[in-house]
Image: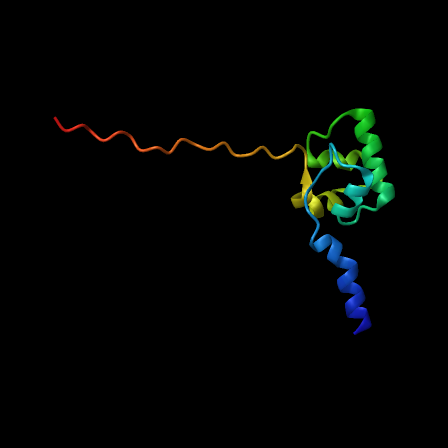
Length: 101
């Protein structure tokens, strides 16, 4: 039972992690949000970003030492490159009814 509780606690942070913008997040935020990315790798991501500019694709993370294709694939759903833009409301007014004359 103790092992089950330990595993639940250990993996709960990745189960409930929210997506992270790798172009603006701190190393701490990245390490918390992405599975298999500890603080050292997250610091390497931030250092790479500072040297080479913002990431243009998730696969560019593979250029960071210690991060492979499998890690990127496992985290694709939680990697953001830009802040999500709010959806603009569309004008859904009804056209004017024909006037009765």
